[in-house]
Image (cartoon, protein in one colour):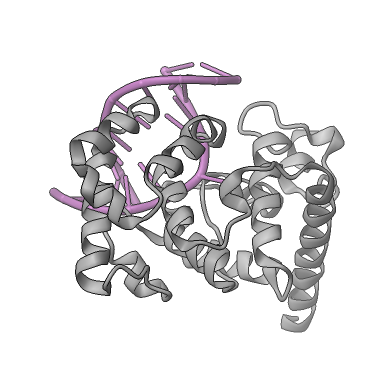
Length: 223
DNA sequence: CTCCCGCTTC
DNA sequence: GAAGCGGGAG
């Protein structure tokens, strides 16, 4: 009984992993923060991406990094200048947050961005998602990305109704870990984000061209 | 677990 | 109206 469930579970994880990775090979989007291993640049991207579309961030990201090449440039600039340069992204409190973030990294960590999930998540403006993104992208740790997009894929395929707390729930984290297994986590997570943004969209998902439709409970119920 | 945030895009 | 590579506060 338990054996069968476990096997079916791993079969689905296996198919999700490979289908998403194959899709990503051809369709993964190409943002500057996805190619760097510099924890600072990834941290900046995550602050900007907070509840903000990637295309929107992409418009200002390069010039922002040019203007603020490191954590000390952030502190030197001060909250007001930062708020002004982040204005087009909305959520104006992020200017202050970014300043406090940089100041705390300098004060507590001598300017070095922490390389463990607990210290990262204790920083202002950095929660589970951003901490995982830094661990995965900068420090090559298999940390899962659980955001509205990846949660949507899992909730649809597995038929679990998503709630506001799904992205922090143990259930979704465990499923995501089973999908990651020992694959290239960074590539898989970016592929998954883009798959959700392009195929498994919130409104009118492209189920007819979705490689997961055979396994997807959401799709089965829609037919 | 629930609610809010702020602007842009859909 | 709702939602976005979420995080913090209640």
